[in-house]
Every structure is written in C-alpha cells, then in structure tokens.
Image (cartoon, helix red, strand yellow):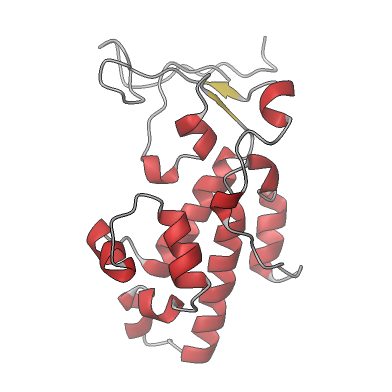
Length: 186
C-alpha cells in the first residue's frame, strides 16, 4: 500500500513506522499495535505520571517499563486497571493469571524487530491458551535492523511525514484521509 498520510497515536505505532527512515512498515506493524491494546486493557489508559512514579524517573520507552519494572518484578497487580479489581466478577487468582497471560502475549507482540513478533494467528492461539507461551525477551533488546525483512522484502506501506511539523500528517490541506493503493491491485 502507499499512503501520504499515516494517522495514529505514536504509542500504537510499530518502531519501524516511527524510526525507519525510508518510511516502510512491515506486515506485523498491526501486531505491535495489538500488543499495546492488550496492555491498555490490562492496565487501563494511564497517564505518564503513573509510570514515572512507578519507576522513579521519566521514560518514553513504555514497553521497556512494562517489561523491566512490571513483568520481571512481578508487579502486574500493582498496575492493574482499578476497574478490573472493582469488578463484581473479580477473582484475584484467576484474574491475575489472565492478566499475566495477556501481558506476556503483549510483550511478544511489541518486540522491537518485526521478525521477532508472532503472527496474528499465533497471537490468537496464545490468547486462547491453545499453545504455550515462552518467556518473552526484552522487547527493546531486538534490533530493528538485524533482519533481512527491512532490506529484502517488498514494503507493505510507504509513508511520508509532514517534516515541517515533524508529524505523520498531510503536508497539504487537501484532506485528512489517505488514499490507499493495494500492492496487488496494480
């Protein structure tokens, strides 16, 4: 696909969308976004002050905070969305096991390198419990540029930024929606 506009919240954007200078994203960019969505479900939408207080410093690397300060230190219960704890059907043991399962799946989805992320089919199997989930590595430890996928495969989408404002928005006032061209429709 080709687009002039890449709207969205940077928290949900895969690293290759934010940092890969040629503007290519992979087929697993949505897997990354889904991982962020899973964390939002478990932890609720928290402001940055919550996470800064949790780790005692400012950090913009949310997934690394979740991995090092929450997952490895087994502090998921400290960060659970209060609505989950207050829910009538809350069962601490079962709810914690489900939350840990979702966080582990999310950490696999949010690996920095797209090659290390599972397919969405595998994510579904992880969430259904039909396959075992290995311990996820630190998502930030995988290198974005260590895979052949960024140099040898055809990009799924090429994006361009509005460099005047350093934002992924239209560079003209012609509209807010991207025109998408499927790579198989040429």
